[in-house]
Length: 136
Ligand SMILES: [Zn+2]
Image (tube, rainbow, N blue to C red; front, side, top):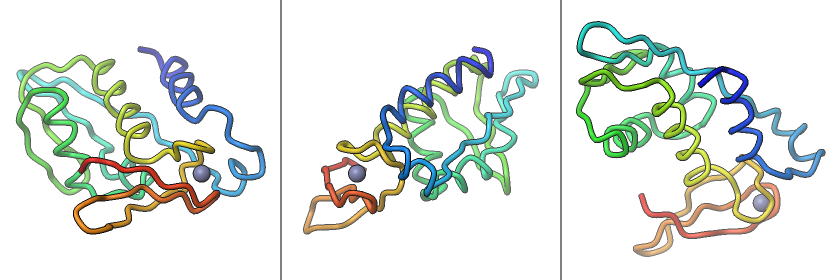
């Protein structure tokens, strides 16, 4: 997947964010910097990506491991995955995470927070106030 495709996927995920919201949140994601080294795959700017997401690093890490069906370890700024994982798959999973755990279901704004309500976790949009349940 080229950088251009990645941006397109993200743009599609962002969908039709009202212009004032998308400009207010000024939301951008760094391009994943992925390197395959021997029998492992390294996402070198994991912490930059998580910072942009404003989500718990361990949650993002565990999601990627589950979705990619591999194990790995997390270091300061990067994560190492066992096996040679195609960069395209990693990028797709990052975009999937954004869709599942970040974007508002109503207005598609990325300006959301998790909200615990009993046993349920809701994703609450700071822009339009909409909530939707998420499974953590
Ligand atoms: Zn919203």
